[in-house]
Image 1: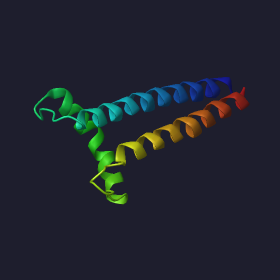
Image 2 (image 1 turned 90 degrees about the vertical axis):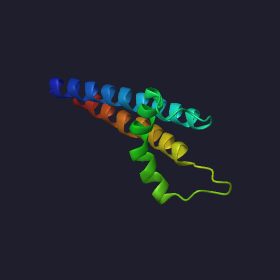
Image 3 (image 1 turned 30 degrees about the horizontal axis):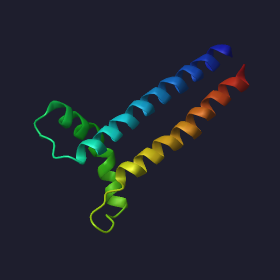
Length: 99
């Protein structure tokens, strides 16, 4: 059973790392959107292509507020924090109970 527990711990750590990295990509996208970036810049294109599918889905559900303020990056960051707090912790606790 310890092999499955170790696998779950490794899975939780990998998931936490992927979520942490995506969180910083979303933050970078939000910071870049405050200036007028060059759309042909490879970094800007990467940030756009990595975040737009998820941000687009959130924008369809949550309307823009007064002044055209886009809260979709904030909602995605809260979702990532929730997944890190709930899912990753649950996987680690499940693995700990299996040992």
